[in-house]
Amino acid sequence: MTLANIPPAPELPGARHLHSGKVRDLYELTEGPHAGKLLMVASDRLSIFDFVLETTIPDKGEILTRMSLWWFDQLADLVPNHVISTDVPEAVRGRAVICERLDMFPVECVARGYLTGSGLLDYRATGEVCGIALPAGLDDGSRLETPIFTPATKADLGDHDENVSYDAVVATVGADTAAALRELTLRVYGRAEEIARGKGILLADTKFEFGVAPGGDGTIVLADEVLTPDSSRYWPADDWQPGRAQPSYDKQIVRNWALSPESGWDKSSGEAPPPLPPEVIERTRSRYLEAYELLTGERF
Ligand SMILES: Nc1ncnc2c1ncn2[C@@H]1O[C@H](COP(=O)(O)OP(=O)(O)OP(=O)(O)O)[C@@H](O)[C@H]1O
Ligand SMILES: [Mg+2]
Image 1 (tube, helix red, strand yellow):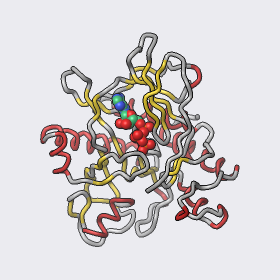
Image 2 (tube, rainbow, N blue to C red):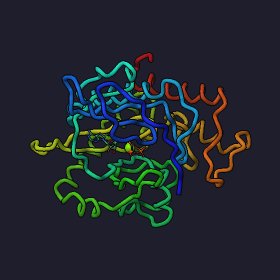
Image 3 (spheres, helix red, strand yellow):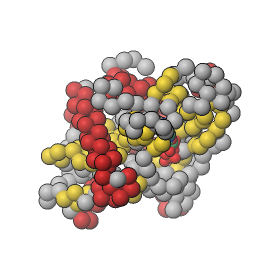
């Protein structure tokens, strides 16, 4: 059992609040040219170990929103996406996207090119990840010979997603859709991995979500956020060294601090971690910025 402590979503003119996750707030637009569409707002919240921290990271929502939009562009020839416009209410400018409201497939479509995290735990326990047998002798951070599709089911707030077999996806969405989701996931991962590698960054794994337009022709559309450090593991290629945890472009700085004696936090206490010191906030912000600038080649 874990705790999430999500602040109330701000009221926005011309929008009705639908849902808040740990990091993002989802609205439906009620007025204007895009009435009926979704407004997905990325906050500056950060979660570690499923706790939403009291401290926010300045510009995180905007950095991740820009990164996701940049990636949607890089992938546009491979798969259609849900983005309609970035002309959003002033209060959330830069960190929100207007998107098509889709019927989402209840599958977290994960691709892994390297073994770590829950994939590594499953491999150590069973020699398999999501029913896919892997060769013996792999270690934390090992590169897989070919990237694999390791779907998960979405957990309720405060629970961990659960890795499931491909057969479980077939049982949920049918054989044709399961095959299409796997194919798209691996194709998009392949493109993104190649682009990132060209910038000196390894894309170890990532999670996509797909949906279809209600009443449409069934075309599968890439939704949610894509290829941000919140949905992906990015590692500096130069530091990659299987056999240990890899340094990464995400909230690792915060996790390390929270687990260190300096924070005074006891992970097993069930309490949220204490507020972050300014120096940890700044280093975390810089890490996100660095990833954004390296990947996109743009200054923030
Ligand atoms: N185009 C879309 N149409 C409909 N729903 C979408 C679309 N894109 C994303 N979603 C859904 O919007 C929700 C975004 O929520 P968000 O990711 O903030 O929280 P969450 O997934 O409930 O929790 P977590 O904090 O664990 O991610 C998700 O349920 C996602 O599946
Ligand atoms: Mg989510």
